Amino acid sequence: MIQRSLLLGLERGTVKLVEHRKEWQQLADEERSRLEDALDASVDEIEHVGSTAIEGLPAKPVLNLLAVADDPAPKAEYVARLKPEGYELRENDAVPDRLFFAKGPTEERTHYLSIAERGSVCHREQIAFRDYLRSNPDAAAEYARLKRKLATAHPDDRASYTERKSAFVTHILDRSENDR
View: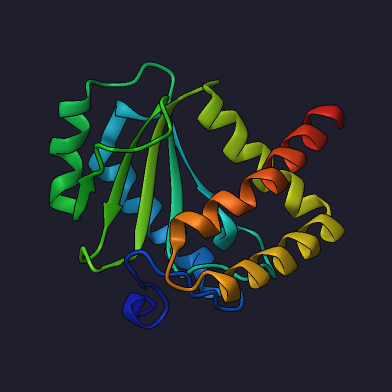
């Protein structure tokens, strides 16, 4: 087992990118296994998404996982099942079709978990973005350059960093749709 504290964690509101670490996949697999046990049949699959899921891409050292459910359970059930695993529901999430949980100390989150219904916009977009960058190294390199530039410009303003990536993300989602 890998020591997570050496590889994960980012101060709240800040932006710090680290070069891709091969251990992230193993950590994601270990967390997926814990979550599958905790969530049991209330989800159908759990995917590793976000920049830590794309080999070679610099990322904030926070693992992003997406739990997909064909028939989602009530919010209270997810909260009850995830609390013992260290996850806290983030109520003020701007994405309308998901439940969003964070794990790790409030000042230094280590994991984000989205729970979405299969086929929802959240589900489709997270998978499409990840898969497109995995299969298009030039687009991944372009995204890496943009992320580094924005991290340098906004090291203490994660909201601005995220907002300024949105046009690129939309562009990639459009390209992935056109490639289907």
